[in-house]
Length: 274
Image (cartoon, rainbow, N blue to C red; front, side):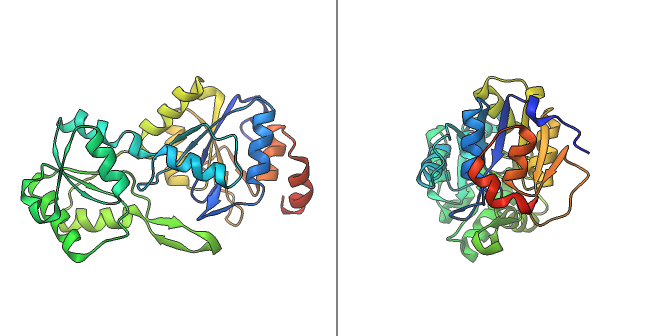
């Protein structure tokens, strides 16, 4: 039984990794359904726990994949530097992660500490690090142990990619650092914490009661959105229908039908999936 009338809602916030796309491939029906939402006057925003890209980077990626309705796209890199400032003021930050995260933290006015100078760090920031080495892991763990200050864009254990496969996620790396440092508790900037959800609502100009979050992760998307008062839709094309979300959908065609929008071509293609 549908607990929330999706057709009455004014806005929808979509998770990206695992929901709108997997790797560099859109999930079936995503482009058509999002275009139908836009035509119907629904306000759209997109949020991702990506620790290697800004919202602008992901907006360009959506446009390249044919999603022309992406205007509001948010990642933890929009606010990670601000979070560090709010909690610990201007800091000397050892960053284990992508260049994009280094740049975001530097733009917020923090000094970046090189791995070899880890003793100078006052904060450690850990993202998904495709250049991970034992040396970098050791430096981050030692600095986190010395300072007790660890911040991360997310604690997602896996990063979904095309073909149903995955890469180790940011959470897997953060866990290694935190445990080696003596169980230092990381400050989480992205989902399921409130800041990205609240920022999305601000961009949409809507109260939480008029917006639904659509995502594939119960822990990050569903519980996080529920915490700020949003309706929740779990996108689970292959998984069981869960008790936690207000609604579970198997496809974007089913989502469109429940929301009262009509991506005609996609509905015909995927009607048997419902």
